[in-house]
Image (tube, rainbow, N blue to C red; front, top):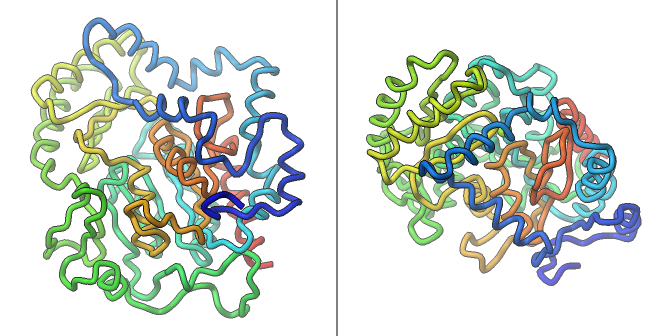
Length: 413
Ligand SMILES: [Mg+2]
């Protein structure tokens, strides 16, 4: 058991782990990868003219096309897989580490539940994937954590029983289905004998559950970390709004969206997506020779909005408020809101086993949180070796679907 009792690793897990020379699971809180995690956390892109060249290199590095043109040599890939083995291949180790814990599932959307496609509006998930997510959500608290705006990602997933954290976690909403809610005392522990007719849910309306979270009827947002999260009354919003820490930035984001859309209009293939609390500038359909023009236009707009910052995802530039809030903070918030931790770091919810699956640099913030807590399993979706704070890997959404199905089967056993 770790110092904080985060994960009990039975012998069979240790044996499974021992097969890999570099692999260490669960990751220690003071992991050797600490420097890497700090580096990955510092994602803000400097748009000064002196670094434009390296910025363009970064855009190229995020391109699957470039990666296909320069496949990793076998030895490099093998070494990476030893450090970040397949979550399917090592499923027994994951299950063993989760034994006696309460699993909470966090899923990125693009590139994780759906393939990366040319037109971001067509990034739909398959019915098979939806069934797999539905199966997981029937057994464990499950959240979608995406850079997309909440409405957009919900329109793709269409499962009302999930938690959704849109805009990189800056817009968190609980289940809109009024009938069910998971809590730390109602989520089954892995390996726990269950009544076969009971699936870990308790019939409490979400509104009532939320009131019990905040303790203040009518105030639907929790204040957690130094006021990062809004704590104001959000009357008039949907019943299930949990957290909107960047609410004050809404007018500014709207202005920047209009300016950016006008600026990139003349660049064929460039598309600006308004994600409510952040903006995405997609360049996956832009001729590479015009990427510099995209960069220049984004830089021109950001000059007028010093309270906005730029980060980069997979073939997308993202503009967000300069607040300390990201997918990692969203993960922390949801674990706390679900009753698995105190939210102030005093109690990391040793009873929980969070599983976070994502493919993007922005998911590294969540992987870093899990590593810092010495808890759960971070799983990177990637066919290629990447610097990551995740412990495991899966190759593509198809393997994600298989992993989710296996999780359901394991929970039902
Ligand atoms: Mg993604």
